Length: 460
Image (cartoon, rainbow, N blue to C red; front, side, top):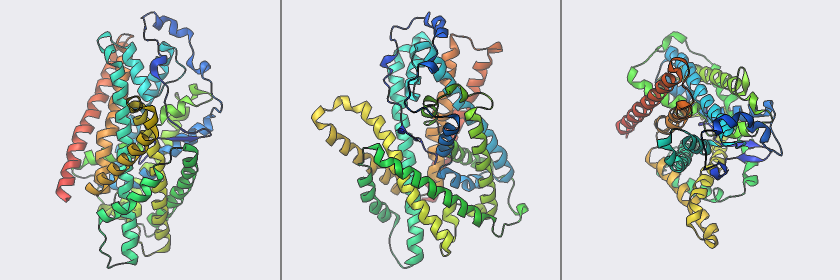
């Protein structure tokens, strides 16, 4: 679902990011808690000042899933062809949805066992390790820290992708109006560094929240303009390949997973629902949202690829003719939208990094340490963008490496660990299913990263 999908949810309370301490989980857990857990309903013990309705939760989840990642779908189809792209997107959408289901379901069930109202991603991982197979329980704290850092670097990787899109979009506009300019990609990255350093120093979330609504409006307007250009002078459907070389499929899979996977946002949405039992199930908020997401992603990928073919770039806005006013507006809109999205996204990993490092910093140096931390990570994302300037390749690499692990492999491992001593179902179907998902996720990770690196080396 995520991204460029968003990993922060804007609600009435601002961006929700799980910061609950797992210390509330009973460290003296005993097996009898499994029997007692049936008496505890985490949903009834949640105390929320402003719980979200099903409709609002659907809107939050849809908003986070339909980010600028949808604009990368034509580039994904370039690595699959039309028919393979359509069925591949649907299948990957189902797999991603099921893995999200596993994460949320496991979080709900382990909340019953540990008698905690709600848990975030990292807290769910620690709770599963703490109450799972005995040999693995000593790794519970390490597992939480590991997932925390993995989530932080995943979002920072997405921020680097945003910088690349910013630079490429601005370069197109400048090159159109100043044909003889000699500005390089690195120069553009350096120019963006100053405003990014300024805005990423904002630590008050209320000051960032309005930027999210503005960015969403700009993205919606950009989406409509892109559809206008796609549907204008639509080419013959038979002119493009129905499938491509199988060696390109890892790039397709990585791009789709990056665009579609919003694993960091589902638990915050579920945790703030008035009726969290409506999140899963059929139809359920999750299934309805993902059905809409998969449908829109498939349509945009197919139509955009048919329109621009092998010239499809990492964002379809880069294919629009800069000389025309609507296209120029779309490029300006995406520049502003991505800039504000960057600052909002950046808030979440900084919260994660700070809560894992602040105990090592003296109280009087907290403010200085946070400023330095934010500056360092901002600079790192800009350096990454300057080093790897090809947008579609970085998207594939990010999706294959980070989102394959957090979105496919980790939820399957958690589901398997939770059920290991509680029953794996008839014919051990949970074991078989989760192993298949883990193997598939590992394949996506290894093959996607390998192919992305090859493409980066080939075009460098």
